[in-house]
Length: 379
Ligand SMILES: *Cc1c(COP(=O)(O)O)cnc(C)c1O
Image (tube, rainbow, N blue to C red):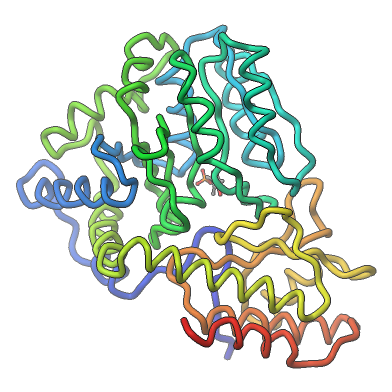
């Protein structure tokens, strides 16, 4: 027998309460029962996004809402500033490219810290840029980006939107949309929202809706104005992912019951314990500004990061993640977002110790777990 533990940065573990709700017989979406579910979900999404505005819901993976953040806000030939420091920053650039939006790329070596002054400089050099498109967490490197500091800069540019891919930020750490002047805040179901993949979200500010009126890029499936109009009637433009929305009602209830601050505190401590546990084993953390969503750990000298990731999964049942693109073989990742608790971290660090021992790395067994235990004591 092998028991499995899912500690990847998405999909993540799903609480049994949510799984059970999604297993109930399907209901029809054009009836009052479903409408009452949508009504509750709309309210609780506003709680999660910390916004008074509508949060749009799409049947797609997170990238659908990223694409919509370009096609619903911009026109062909517009300029957008993107930060390329990992796979997901590249995704913003690739979406822009696909739609004929010119990108001004701020290139930061993967895993390095982002300096908000670079954004200010890019905006000064390109005052006609219509948007700054960044990540809250660059999941491929485990780096957290200074969203608040950047939003504080962008808010002084009335013709520029602040767009944040917070697919591994929402429900992980503080990202109050209205307070921080984030114009488009993008989320996805399979990360901290404790659901299967298949839902994407976008919180949209008043400023962003003004851009939407002028945007000329083609839009059909992801037509935000139409989704907004339908949501006012607790409906969606097309057939929604009904079971996922039923699950979402439950997961949002759980988040609300725990309280956002407690959720953030829990995940923060879990991530800290993961980092400290790894460091106690003599390993290094890859990102200079690590996110609580996922910890990218540098494979020790002479040991292949993919071998660590594969052994964790194959021999010890712990699904983390490897490195992507240029980081393949150099790092492996363990996530702490969503439905995770202290025993998940202990499991991960134990499996890591077993794996490192197998691969011939020299260390004293138990020191990583001991350090993690210490960090988790008061959680
Ligand atoms: C997971 C993730 C996405 C979305 O990927 P999908 O496969 O489309 O759900 C986007 N951005 C970040 C930062 C992510 O972690």
